[in-house]
Amino acid sequence: MIKAVLIEKLLRSCKEIDTIYVLIRAKKGKDATTRLHDLLDEFLFHRAHEENPKGIHKVVPIIGDMELPGLGLCDEDRKTLTSKVTIIINGAATVKFDEKLSVSTGINVRGTKEMLKLAKECRNLKAFTHVSTAFSNTHVKHIEERFYEPPMSVEALEAVSQLDEELLEKILPSLLGKYPNTYCFTKAIAEEAVRRYGEGMPICIVRPSIVVSTYEEPVRGWTDSVYGPTGLIIGIGTGVIRTMYMELDKVADMVPVDLTVNAILASAWYTAKHFKENQTSNIPIYNYVSGPQNPITWGNFIELNRKHGMDKPTTKAVWYYGLNPTNNYYVFLFYNFFLHFIPALLVDMYCALTSRRRVMLQLYNKVMKTTKILFYFSTQEWRFTDNNVREMWHSLSGPDRAVFPFGIGEMSWDYMTETFLLGIRVYLVKDDVSTLPEARKKWNRLYYMHQFLRITAMSVVLYLGYLFVPMVSWLILG
Image 1: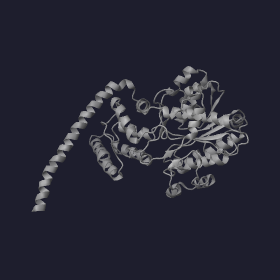
Image 2: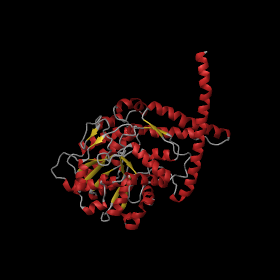
Image 3: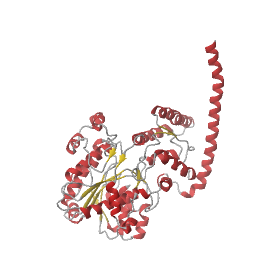
Image 4: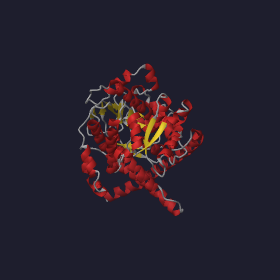
């Protein structure tokens, strides 16, 4: 998501750039060039094409792979990059929290190491920005803008990742230790790679927190990711998710992707401006987070989504809104059984009797797998320091702030959640805003069905209680 918005922003707002080289690999039967052209044809780039029609010709695909030695570059492409590149933004990463350690290591750590080696060969390098994550050091409750001791060395992880996959799975919990998943674990070690192999270079690290849809540019609400809070809100808005394990009073640290991209671009400019030729250490780190300046709790975030979601429902809803969050894991398991498992089982039984495809239990297994990954972040809270980000923001001129806004303190969460929901509806659920009248009619029908079943269930419970209490009294009193 960051990569696409970053390229779009460069095309639209940095028209003087000569060439944008994009390291890309073949995937899912598509060659690298086709993948890049498909990306540039997406709706996200329409505004950039209108404002800078010739810009698309500046985007040049470089066939490579972060997991391969030397990034999988051919000699000719490597010579081109080392002679022409002045700015490198290393945003390539696998963001799957439950990715295999071997894959996470290959992309997040070895890929970063190889990118740093390439950067050292670039004769005209002015800045290198490494995009990390604010959650690379979750074992620390107060995360400052500095390096922390990694869980293991880069070389040790590279060696361990070569072990048999089955053995790796067995020892993974002990390897991760206090780290919640392979993503946070490998991103922490990738920062160590930057510290070791980036010394003496004009380099910095940007640590965004949970990245969500665009706030304003180039269009409101654009996203292509279902990870994190996005998947949760889709589930809640369609009536699929009825309960969630979370601490409603904990801060949900999230940042819009367009503001994040602006901060990344500003960091490259700031690094190039302030780097000294004889500098050998003190690599600057920027915690791009919302908590210190503009915090929002999970409770407020859910409530704002409920407010805007009720007004803008989707035709893809399968049931009416009814989230029951809890901070007690055993209560969550109870809710999950009766609000998720039992309804899914009944629907699948009906489908079996009517010779239809049974999908609900399978769907809920996937949903729960996704939400369980979020449990760690929805039940804990971290305190961040973002002094470097504030200093960088204040160093921008007025015109630059207007073109590259990333002042998180000025963002409206009410506007952001409305934007967030619209984006999810249009770009992920694929439900155009023109269907709103139809969606509201369906929403009303689901509401009356929900109320009817609720009253019926309460009546059954009261009737059973009416029968049960006299029976128990008779047994006790004889």
